[in-house]
Each structure stands twice: as C-alpha cells, then as structure tokens.
Image 1 (cartoon, rainbow, N blue to C red):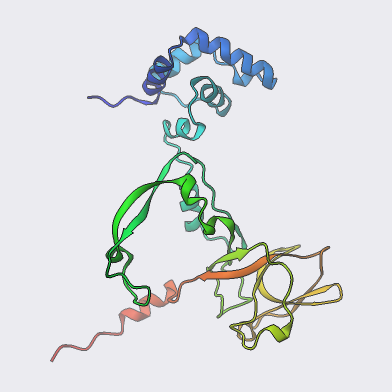
Image 2 (image 1 turned 180 degrees about the horizontal axis):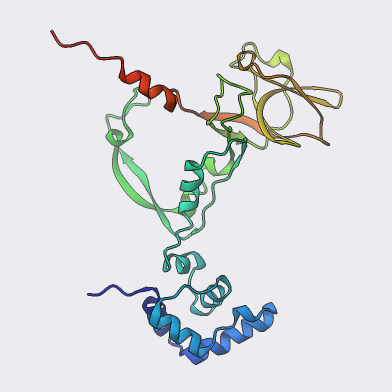
Length: 272
C-alpha cells in the first residue's frame, strides 16, 4: 500500500469529516473575517492544489484547517514533518553560554510517552544499576498523566557554560530543579556546611545566575563558591534582581568531554 503524501492525507481527513473543498472555503472565509486577516482564507482551488501536490501551507491556513477538520494543530504540523516535541531535544543539544530557565513544554497533551510502568522485583534503590536492567515493561502512558507528577510542579534551569559561579559544586552545563515556592532566604544559622547552604536561581539585569545569596537591607549579594574564583555581585533586591526559587535538585556531568581524550591514554592492566 502506497504511503500518502501530506496533501493526500489532508484529503483523507477532509473526506472523513465529510465536507467538500467548497465547504472548507466557506468555513475558512468565516475564520478570516473573524480574525481580520485574509491569510486564514482557503480557496477551493488552493485546497485542491495542496491535496494534489502536498505543498506546505502557511501557518494561518494550517490554523484554519485545524479548526475546520477538528484536528490537533500539533498533529496537523506533524503531517508536514514538523514534530514540536523535538524542540526540547534540540534545546538540550544546543548549549547556550548564559544561564537560563529551561522549560519543559508538552505540545500534545493528548499524546503518549514511553514510561517505565513495571520494575523487576530484584530492583533496589540502594544499588547502582542500569535503568534498562531494572525496568521490566515500558508502557505508553498518557502525557497528561506524566504532567501531574511532582516534577511538573517545578521549574528547571540550565547553568550556562560560562557561568562558573558555583563551580565545582554546580559546574557549568548542569541542569537544576527549582522550587519556585521557596523564595525567602534562610538565615546562616540554618545550615552548617556548604552542602547544607541553600542555592538559589536568581534573575539579574544581565541574565540568570545560580548562586548562594545574602540579603542585607535591600541589597542582594550573590556569593560564589570560593573555588570558582568568581567575584561577589551586588544588586538592589526586587528592583535589579529577583529570586526565582531555591535549587532542590542537580543533574550534572562528572567527566567533561574535553577530558575523555586523556582517559584513552590510561590503559587497563593486561591480565596475567
């Protein structure tokens, strides 16, 4: 069976809905009038050409087709090879130099995602192992369910490659989980070591920073890790800088890519 090109699949969707190309023209004219933009209008001739050739419509015409065909806009884009769910993948691969908020967007709330739904009975939280060895069954779980897990209630930040403020405790290139419900600074008596000292994600005039913080009167001081060789930075609290929330989780690389080459020169001892 031949696979239909995007235009042919559009035709199949239209016929499934049970309307003609002239009816699409009529409905799209109504949308264009409501939006006050003629680009939402789809003529009978234009639609017939798209269905025959599979050319990519404009965003406005895709919008109208999504409305008329009662089809998810994200799904409609996927007919033309545009998968919005891959935006997050590319954002992870393109590592920006400045620290910024990393948002987890779900574009198709009605879709599903592969998720571990059953683990081997020998699995133990105390043991280090491969995920592939502890997951017994990967199932298709609705994304709407995953969104209600606790991880969806947090914000996530990425520590830029040029941000050495908390290095080596939070090295550049790390991802951090942020509790945006905790924005008040804890007093120094509430922590004993640097591991207990709260780290905050802060918005400053020049961008975001992941740092220890001190507040005296209305001056917020960003305190770097002493080994980072970064300097103290002072801002007017509330006017120049704002605390996004407290960092409650860190995901980081423990071997930097540039060090991998040197690891190759270390040979394993030959078996005797």
